[in-house]
Image 1 (cartoon, helix red, strand yellow):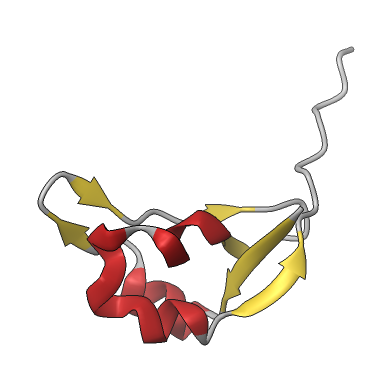
Image 2 (tube, one colour; image 1 turned 90 degrees about the horizontal axis):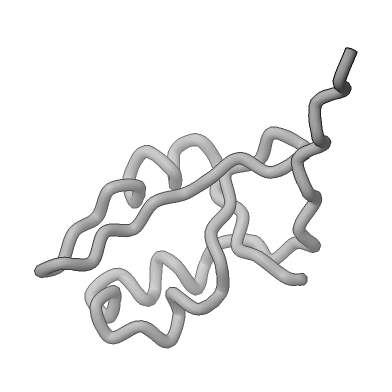
Length: 70
């Protein structure tokens, strides 16, 4: 699955962007990258920041490893 990866500066600029009831939130992947799904590119709630979102690097999602049970 392809996701959008943000640098720390991009994350700080975009995370928490709010438009009405929609809030943009990034999550950490298994390689400690800030990522968000590509669906935000088609969401009209984020149209004002579309160019910034479109500039994010596209990478393959790396799942977060499950913790070992001891």
